Image (cartoon, rainbow, N blue to C red; front, top):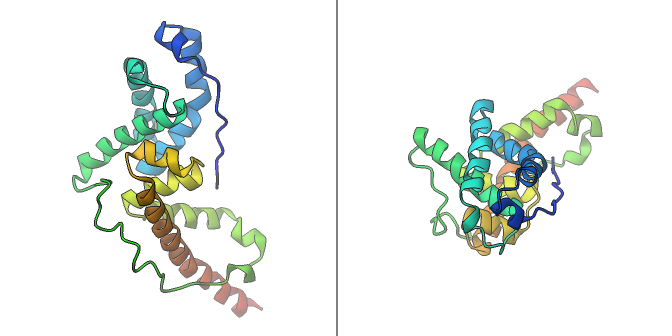
Length: 203
């Protein structure tokens, strides 16, 4: 599931000078991860394409605002997340990932159900159906947890870069990530529990 994205050495000075070849390198290097993030956040190919296009247009327009304190990729992720959030809020005005969310407390983080997935053969765990179950579980996460999980565990940003991209504190990122992982494990325990029971019936 993890999708490592190699950082590419992009010259911000060349971009600011209007170097089209350098901008083409930027788009070529980071289009795929930005599109995947938009698709997983919004679940719609057209919306993901819009996020992709808007991200690079916004980056080109606001190059002067990029101070270089974070990586170019983290900066692009932040633009993409903000654009995806605006799309989400058009249909769900209550969507909120603010830093002072009342759910960001460390208590009550114990899931109610765990299943030992080691009892399942590897081909079941890695099957297309298994991956679909994971994608569905990720999609069902609350937005503030899903975005942290996508950036940290799927796109493989660091805690610091995830916090930077989402405008959160690192401590809130850690709590939301823990909540997301526990929620996913609980949801998948239901799915794999049913598979284990089916395996026992078939034996």
